[in-house]
Amino acid sequence: MSETRESALTEIARRLSGMVIVSADIREEDVADADIESLVGHILDFYKESQKPNVLGRDALAEIRLSMQQQAPKQVEVTPSPDYKPYAMDYKPAYTIRKTRHMPTGATVADFAEHFNDRLAKMERIISEGHAGSMSNRVKKIENVKQYADGREVTIVGMVYSVSTTKNGNKMITIEDETGYAKVIVSSYTAGKQDKAAGLSAEAERIAPDEVIGISGKVSGPFIIAKSIIWPDIPVRTRPVTKDDLAIAFLSDIHVGSKLFLEKQFRRFLEWINGNIDYRKQLASKVKYIVVSGDVVDGIGVYPNQDKELAILDIYKQYDLLFELLSEIPEYVEVFVLPGNHDAVQRAEPQPCLPSEFTSKIKGSNIHLLPNPGYVRIENLNVLAYHGTSLDSVIQAVKGCSYAEPARAMEEILRARHLSPIYGGNPIVPTKEDNLVMDEVPDILHMGHLHKNGYSEYHGTLIVNSGTWQARTSFQARMGHIPTPAILPIYETLTRNLVAIDFNETMS
Ligand SMILES: [Fe+2]
Image (cartoon, rainbow, N blue to C red; front, side):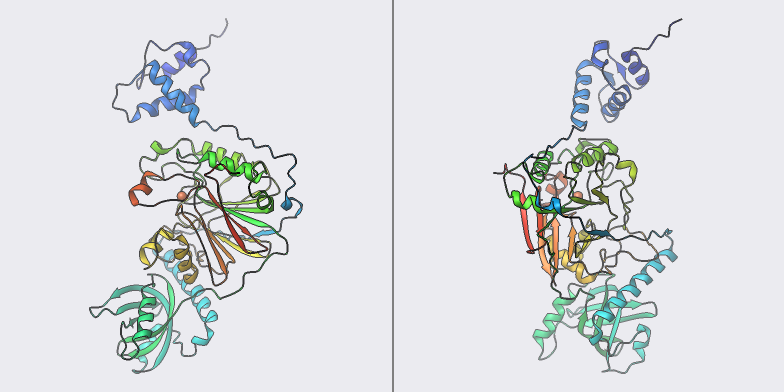
């Protein structure tokens, strides 16, 4: 007896039975070539939130199949120009990815206490070593300050527990360590020293909760009257240059899978890096490294009703398309990719590298996965790449910071020597060691997250926020944020020149 196979239409009707009725106007040939599994899933999704009766007619089927076609990743193929001899091709790459210690942890009060004690100890070291000249009258245990007589000059180092403004307009800062706390007053006025007091008062406006700072001042009853604020900060240096004329390009927030992912502009970038566009071709040929700072796909379920804004509903397909695209970058270019808050790893930071289940489409050995934050030494430059989720809370807490100026908030992060200085602003993992302390001074600090390009130089460190490859979202429109998509910053490591290339326009 020969086995009779169920027709595609019958199988679809059977799988949908009890949930969606298949109308009689649908014919076998309408579904003969369909991936039944996937089609049934999309039909169910289509009717999930619909108020319409669950009767699948021919028009609805056509609509569903069309949207499936639009979602399916297209083949990516960029053929490099045959006469293009890129300058960076002949250089042997020189990079070292810093290994992260993975320390399993719980989330108990004790875990958090241990985490914050480690932060305090690391920051205390950074401050006392970096500002040795200010530490001569240091009182190591804050609880001992109360033993000092009025008028005594002291320096303390501790974590900011709270910042408030008194009725007289002075700032009151509570600083604590594991032994106790001290109340510090930053006066808005000091007789005969208005300018100095005004300067100190303005500085105090920049203190954010949970930062570790030092204070030098005079004991006065139960208070310390501040004379200076000692920020952890980074030393002033001259950024090294490389011996060869190479370049590093910076990308972030590609958001593949979003309906607003600017695929056309991204493909234009791929054509450019392959030497197929006659615009700044020499610069393209110098790019030896690319750092990608997170939100590489749009993800799923990141915010309510996100599915309505997705072109690709399957997270695996989002990563497939991303890595198909990134695999079109020539293999002599080393690409470092880290996750962000939209990616398929834990939300709390530090985030691990993207797991291998999402990376099967990586073709070359030139694509490297980094954790967030990720430290990579490129040539003789220390590059610190961090997605930048904490920028939101820094912008909210620190006077003078705004979404319009990403580099300004990034400077505050350098000054705090901590990538997520404000606890509670974004989730963190209470690891035994606080890996968000910036224990190495970066020559380049690269972030994204704000979807806005921004650049500056602070104490010799190059600050780059590389914007986005996603058009303005409805959320950004509601918040009044104006993104700067498809603008690629490129740093020339021999000349210290930073160039931004706009891929929104047809280039010539
Ligand atoms: Fe993003």
